[in-house]
Amino acid sequence: MRIFLAGATGVIGSRLIPLLIEGGHEVTGMTRSEHAVPRLRGAGATPVVCDVFDAAGLARAVTEFGPDVVLHQLTDLPDDRAALAGAAEANARIRTEGTRNLVGAARAAGARGLVAQSIAWTPTSPVAADAARDLERQVLEFGGVVLRYGQFYGPGTYFPDERPPAPRVEIGRAAARTVEHLAAASAIIEVVD
Image 1 (cartoon, rainbow, N blue to C red):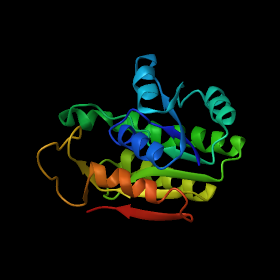
Image 2 (cartoon, rainbow, N blue to C red):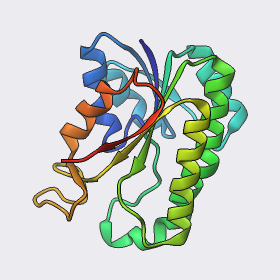
Image 3 (cartoon, one colour):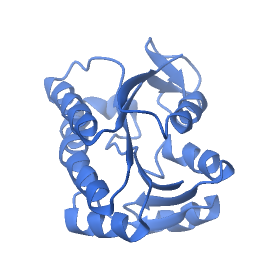
């Protein structure tokens, strides 16, 4: 399949690229940063620099690639877990406006599939909870698949050396399960240990 991966340099996106390439898929990886281009190219993906909040530029990038599936792994989370409380608004914007732009781009490109990252727990922040519900509604209205991940643990996550409280999922297992659901029928699927 031809897969447009939004969030290609994130904690799960970077693990998805080699799995997708090994599976014979053609991957375009989206990043906001020119600095990430060599890393994406080195991993075997065709890099595209684009901001999810630039709806016209995003639609152009997705349409030019012509994906079978758009894979939404975008978040706006800090590297430091202690700073999470202050990130709710930015991450909510990715889940609402960013998802709206990505769904619009997928429609414009004629993509037949959309697979998006959500969460398997109820956030304590009302803003985050509303944003997660909005993301899921948009994806399901497209006819896509919502993957509700447990909290990631393993190298490169907020929990590199310990397991967080349930629901949780080891980051490598989450990536592998994501690839398994690329052609799934529209549904909400929990991805947890």
